[in-house]
Image (cartoon, rainbow, N blue to C red):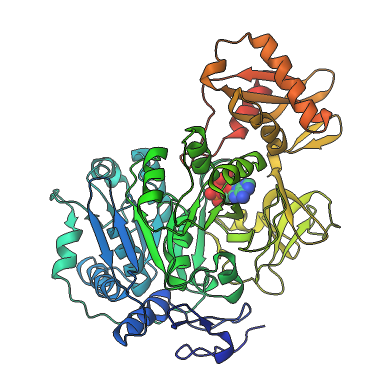
Length: 565
Ligand code: ATP
Ligand code: MG
């Protein structure tokens, strides 16, 4: 299983992919397990070398803008220089060592990339978090992880200070700001004065690299710890087939910097192929700004949660034919087929769905150019072997509902998390026979296409019928009155459980007769999908409970329902 490391420079001939500019990106076969891997030295410094030898085109590696007209453009050489400085700040100024944990809570500012890559170079394990965190959330994260350092901004520094005394492990506080702040190190000036000479650690592929806190959709966030294998995974042949990025591409991934999708989409994916990563500071998801940006800059690919595309569609812009955009990807929550159809109608582009978790990175997806089946999340991306399993880990036949399982025996695939930090019980709990059990329910057809039904707990069992909330939500989405909905199970004295829909109405429908509207919506669902799925109970609400990621907390709604019994 553990094949010999092929050596990096040069990579084996057959593995080299011809980029447009003529430069070849380092690649590995899906089942290669190099003993050592570090994305900073093996990939970023490789592109820097190509730049120096005049073998790479002039496109920047990093292109950052904000709404005030500021712009930052870095070549790979700039990135190498700046991140070596960051590495020196961590080891020399902060005294951090390989394996130490660092909490990284920054908005989309250029320093985020200096910190992440600086960590790669030193082996400091970084823990991204969204800037929407509050003192209590930060305390939870610092205590759980025992982080020795934190990097954040002015806005969050007081929140950190209010809990720092309860975090004995925390010894270095780094601030990214134009102002100084007492008790905090000034990251920007430290970068300026640090030496650009640094030798990247020789990390083992299995050494820890990053910890992601899960979204906490179903409870307290868990710490999924990943090795450098997560970064190696983006360099595997199969993974490059997902987006098929060329050095001339300009990729804009809108994920919040706190999630795994940001590491994959704003760092690993673009730079594994040497293309330009585009970043807009985007303090909030303003659909007008997003649309303007797509018209103004030569962006060729986007990655964003379904909710972002949904927000754009809801604005009813007259023109969504973007001049350079070619390929759109989405993931993190279910993409409703109705949204895909609308996006296609207005932009002429498809939405390519991917599915993954903090524990797994992208596990399956609709690869660029692959036949699309409406409603499916695409096919497994090697080296993962996804099977639909029962709760004992037995593989189920095609078109049978079960858990999405990723094979971990006889060997754990590159890119799957190592374990939940400090939580062997939880780590053991998700092992199911030869598989890691994602806890999500789905079916797989004979061609290997995977169809998401819902989280294990979210699937509704009504009179023996098993109903995925997403199917009902999609049916509701097709009705003009529905802005958004969440479908959950609700107790019923005669039927046991029934389908209940919480619905946020579009403003034009707020004054409509509610009884009438409920009947109409029920009728509508019965007419577009199997009638047994229709919501017997409907409740109109002004908003749905969501995580900071923007995911609907169905569990909360369900608990409320059952608590009422
Ligand atoms: P927690 O594990 O703490 O409850 P979480 O599972 O929401 O939180 P994440 O790891 O951020 O935390 O999210 C992964 C989950 O998001 C998946 O398990 C799945 O339920 C959902 N998800 C991701 N992509 C898709 C998709 N394309 N379609 C449907 N659901 C998706
Ligand atoms: Mg989860």
